[in-house]
Length: 365
Image: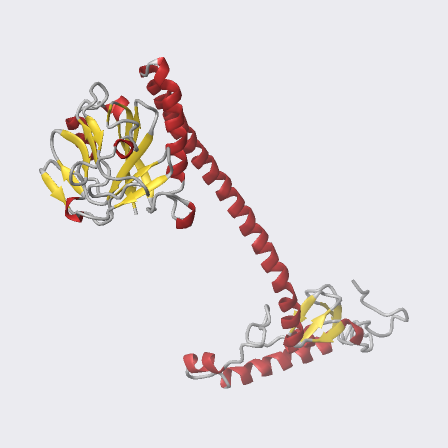
């Protein structure tokens, strides 16, 4: 804070007026500086005159006034009706004209810098990229945290599904006799591989089965039973399904239908139905008698084709009533003919056979 008087004790330091303690007393301002009584009165009178002028010039229509105000101006904190005009370095404050009149540093020209809104805009604009980068970093952290949480949830779900699948596989192997276990393991590898190719992202030319979609295990013979009623209990009215069959000879084959299985007896048209062999990597589509694509029957699990190109009978795990007579509706391999022994043995390994395992999956396109 400046002293009240100059060194010669004849003038006030702030206003340079003559020092007469009887007629020209000193006044201390809010900032700590002093001013003579004469200057203080002049500034007070000037401020009062400005207030009177401002009062008479006050806008009569407030809304219209607000719309016409220039938003580029910044208002003074102390005198809210005044626009900021100057920045005072010594006080580190933005000042309006009234603040300047009240300031005790007015004669110190180096302390004041004319205020221009564009400089503030430029300064704030330069901060925008920095703030955006901070926002991006924060968002990246949020994304990483969400990803971690989601992965943890997915890992937990995958672990549960893996544990259930491992348990099911262990139970299946336990139920099979020792000579059937290696056959089942081969079945498992082939089925799992071809199920993985049903993903929508896999190119059709890279897979044997011409279907795509999400699969879900509906029925498994060693778990749910091999009777026809067991099959229909778990598989009827589920829309498109694909079946995988393991014969006693270690052959892995199957069939697909796009229409739901049901208790109703009779042949059904299904232009999308087909038979396949995973062991021989072959696909057999309909080429004749297409009105007989699929046969629904209560006493059988699945029947495909006129003349029973493929028939899986009830209790197929304990009898050899299941059979293959490929070529009646579904095209046999090139060079094979309907009724030939090699044609009849093509899918199951023999014309009639027992079934070691059968799995049926729904396919959600």
